Amino acid sequence: MSPSIERPRRTAPVSHRILVGLACCGCGASGGPSTTAAGSAADLVLRGGAVYTVDATRSWASAIAVRDGRILYVGADSLPSGMIGPKTELVELAGQMVLPGFQDAHVHPLDSGVDLGECKLDDLTTAVEIVDTIRAYAAAHPDLKWVRGAGWQLPVFPDGNPSKTLLDQAVPDRPAFFYAADGHSAWVNSMALALAKMTRATPDPPNGRIERDRRTHEPSGTLREDAAELVADLLPERTDAELSAGLERAEKEANRFGITTVFEADAREPELKTYAAADRAGKLTFRVIAASHVGEAAGDSLITRLEDWRKRYTATHVHPIAAKIFADGVIEARTAALLAPYLDRPGDSGSPNYDSTTLTRLAVDLDRAGFQIHVHAIGDRAIRMTLDALEQARRMNGVRDSRHGIAHLELIDPADIPRFRRLGVIANFQPLWANGDEYLTKLTEPALGPARSRWLYPIASVARTGAVVAAGSDWSVSSLNPLDGIEMGITHREPDSPKQKPWHPDERVDLATMIPMYTINAAYANHQERETGSIEVGKAADLVILDRNLFAVPPEQIHYAQVVRTILEGRTVYQRGGH
Ligand SMILES: [Zn+2]
Image (cartoon, rainbow, N blue to C red; front, side, top):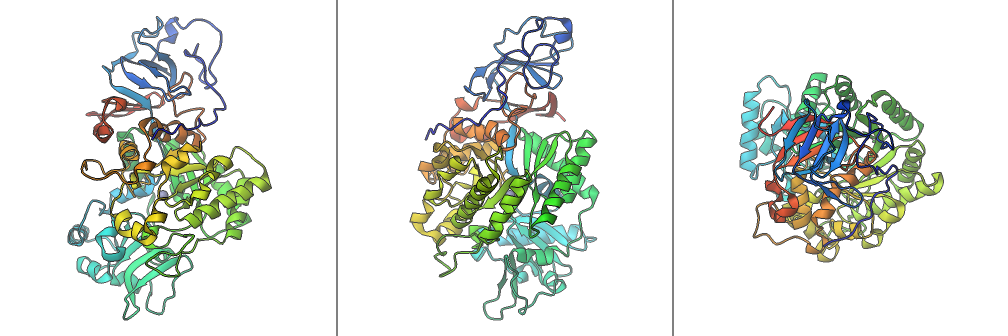
């Protein structure tokens, strides 16, 4: 329950408690004059709080001073004289908690922000509600050529497999396209299938499956993985204005939950362009570390493209330093690559998106070009293949500060658990998924049986090895609120479900493990730990103020905590009850 995790390696420890003078290089200044000169007053002072710094010793403080976007002082309430000047904003916290701004280590902000402006199905729990919602949305938007949206939950439909005829009831007159909440399946109506010229004669694409009517073999309306792209390719391109509006919605949502840095887990050029443009216009209210989409392309043309994007779209707060590879799909759609067959699909253990030679070549090439490799891997076979490929890259190119990571990590073979630490691979978990919901109980565990299910989401086991563990929401797959993730990593229960049995109690972790997963460890995963991730003198003032001390409330009440204020580089980007 209380694994001690290894601290990420800190390349530039900041040891001074007061930043002297106006230096803001993040190096921590030494010597020099005292800080009492009039010019050294802080812009902002937070006082009387429970400040959990998440520094190397996990120290506590009660006051923070900020100037020019940097942390000037961390310590007791008795600040050095002169630090509070006539223009200083002084905030009395009265016991409220301050943490480093949260970092989401795997999220899809732009897509999710765009989705928020379309037909959203995430919270609906019956097919009737879903059809009614889509029908109402279509009626309210008569001008749309396509009715599109996202968020339907697989467990609502038998086998996670909704039919085109059901969607035809809601949208009979236009093509309709809806991604599932996990983004790995799509639900389309008859007109969409007709436009894509998909019939019983259409073969499944290499990394996808067209669900079919058992009797007629006609496509039945659900498309898995790359089969969805056969229809998605026909959707109208998002305009720049739609993307910017989506980004603004995402920024508001993230800041509202105390998030100051996001790892954009799968960006293509239009997304990178949108982030960079927003930052260059001074409008970005979170930092973006981005993973560029790899897809089919391989070899020199891939590296050239990704290097070009990295150069073109790097901005002050935008860093396209990573490359995203999908190694497999998801267990609930039976598209994850497993070491042994799915129990309900004899002989079928799912197939990885790349054979191991291709995956290894990709890893070696990307690593050599200095990219951080970020891999979606869910099944135990995909995870092992990825670890093998990353190990090979290390062998071929030598050990460097690569910080490659694997996200999702749903089913890890126990033999592979020590390899994360050994290979320096970041374990990027989504703690919101480890809670015994219907995805697990109805769609996942029955396909694996109890012995293999023991190794679903082994967060505590991996953390105990000393590997760096980071956390992300995968929003809009699940809640963007880090407090939900922190709570569920500790309780393994849905919020507000006191009667629910904790799922896999042995793999729960404690609060002192969860907070770093959303702060310093995520910062390390983002190559940002010298700048952010903890509250230390010299670092950027990325902070979140919570209305209560999380260590003082029972774990099942963590999600009741409210963000009072979110601060990015000393600037307030969210204030409760404010703008
Ligand atoms: Zn994702």
